[in-house]
Image (cartoon, rainbow, N blue to C red; front, side, top):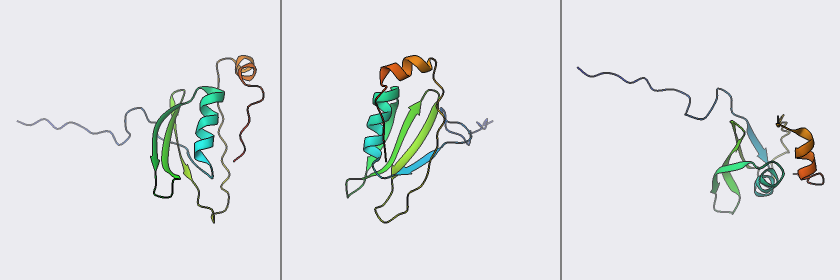
Length: 101
């Protein structure tokens, strides 16, 4: 007798909702997030024109996906709230670090 194994609709390490950020300059955003917050890059898929067609990062226990918007696309606002263990230490680590997409 075969026993069916239930497949989860949510991949391991992901949650029910995963933010997807669309910006022009994802490579720079990834660099900023790593430098400022130690964010771990999981994947980066380049497309033929050199832009990023898909990227994934792990921020704490959450995955954030992103890709480069096309030059003729309007800007897409995105807001992420990031919780850190020690706000002051995080600020002191990179008080002048900013990113503008």
